[in-house]
Length: 236
Image 1 (tube, rainbow, N blue to C red):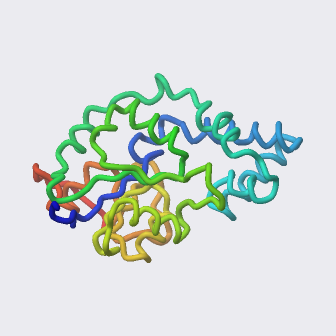
Image 2: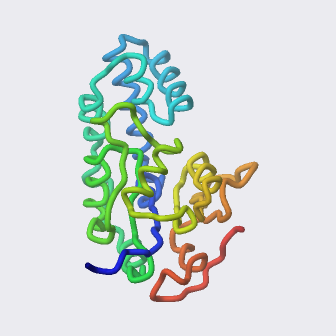
């Protein structure tokens, strides 16, 4: 038998993390979610938007509230929302991102995707970015299983650790654009970097040990995981 894999794991969020917010994917998704509420719950546009935001705040995902309170078909939702996003042409290969990920020393750390999207959306995004070969696995919100488990809930972090083969929370490293997700990861004991893009204001309270303005800054925070050492400014 081979030696056990004791490498720490670096978890990467996908949406608004591996591609920038300026792509406006989030706005497109919000519009499709609102349309779903209007169509399937017979709501006005205003009421649909309000209920969408209510479920997002209460459950972490709008779909969680829809399944819990309205018994909708989550795979139908996925087809009409996530998989309906016009990503082709919007998300394109990013040579700098690929270079960064290629420079991760996988003899020292395991790169792993960690998303609240269903598997089809997560795989589609990394395929369009042409970086799917640079990760060793993906933990996703499985729309086929009830109850839903998603970030920032403890069970989702449990799932990620189990699927990635982590022994201890101290072996987990994480980057996400969500303040809430980063706060929960940090509290769990994960070494966490909150990705806050340059045009966004400083939060009143930092979400995590590290706050970064771009992914390239990961090199200076975690030089032990990169083959090439570069110095980049970072907010502590």
